[in-house]
Length: 231
Image (cartoon, rainbow, N blue to C red; front, top):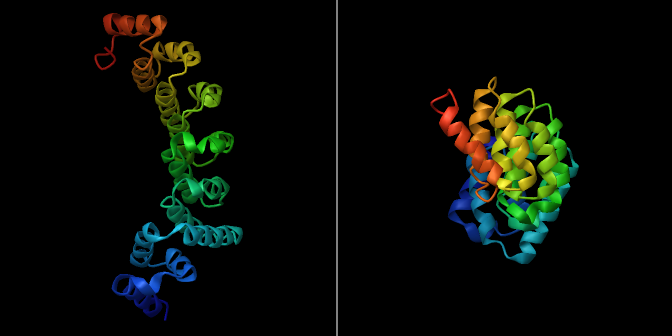
């Protein structure tokens, strides 16, 4: 029965998009277990006018309130197609019990750049998330959003026990380009025990062309580092 229902809905989406305009139908499709149905519904989001989008956001908010582990990731995927208006709901989604939804939500927030600055505090909290993909994507999002308030957190992440987190933090600090991060990056660039952190930190220092100490550190690495890749 579910397969039949999904197939009918799929045909409606593709063959008669004019019948697909009501928000309840879109919501139903967006959380369908059938990937083709969800994909078709996602394409319809671009056709919504302002009022329809507001209604849909309200309906998606209601689904998030249900705390349904099977639907959160689908809701977040839809929110990622709805522009800056969806930022408040994406921030809420960072608290989902589904690590996939948290990962996708923080990715989507990062894509919004500076418009997602209200999310920075919530994203910083994700650096303590038990799921590694969440932590890495949170760091990347902080770099994309570009709020200097994230610098102390990212500097601390340079010493994280996981190498992927350390390297992502160095790259994010380079994206931010805040001069208060230069000293920490210079220290990471001299860390002989953590090769990939060193490489990432040196790459990040390249973003600080106006900082004499960063340029000095780059010259030192180019002339004297034992690692061919670093040089």
